[in-house]
Picture 1 (spheres, rainbow, N blue to C red):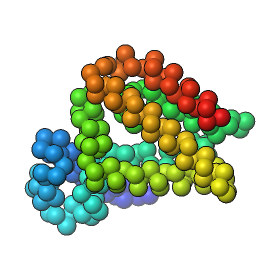
Picture 2: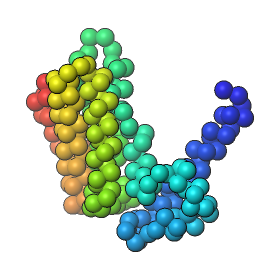
Picture 3: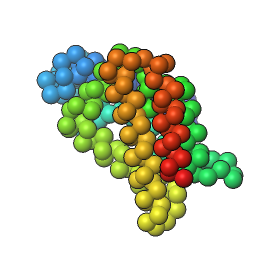
Length: 198
């Protein structure tokens, strides 16, 4: 990759982040349904067609924050060390994310993260679009696990467990508890859930 290509890619990524950050700020302030795509474009100081080059749908303006985790479970399975069972690798990965208070685990009490999750979980169009992200992850994980119905069932079970764990953690924090306080319960829940998967 040439230096100019690298600069262009970094500039494009910065523009994408700026648009997404402007959108999320507006959505958190006013609500998803009260903000138009035109509002977001104006806040980001770009045209509407430019916005749609970066984000195909209004929902993607919010859910781009999950993009870093797209295909993550499949990568964990593919990249695991020899001799490590897939569910063990996924369990360790989730536990490490809990320890980091990664927002994707629901175990993060930063006010903007709590508000962001509330926005996603309580806005039907966002929840629906998130389901599509999860189905794509499920297909990728099934592919990494092998062929056939057993791989598809295992992938669906693993991702359902992770979704339930994350939602449970978020709800406890949304109810007023701290991530530090919830952490031991989150770890115990994850250990129980992944043991059942085995």
